Image (cartoon, rainbow, N blue to C red):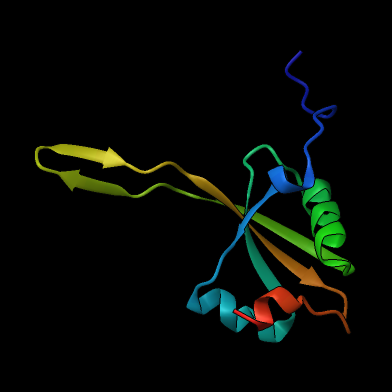
Length: 102
């Protein structure tokens, strides 16, 4: 019953936002791009979403879960929620123009 194989997600539900950090920007030289993705999304869904959204060919997808950070607010300790990041490696010759303009 807990099988998520039949879970259908729309394109805008899978790719939440691009990750624009110093490290992610340096990865663009190697034709790799970083996105924050939905927790439920799997590698084939992420690959399909990037290919449809940016009209490129994806060679490989690496996914990791970034743990939430703990911060102190007075006496309390508050933890921000964990989030999921995907590093998408494109086929040679393809680029995502969205990142070039940022």
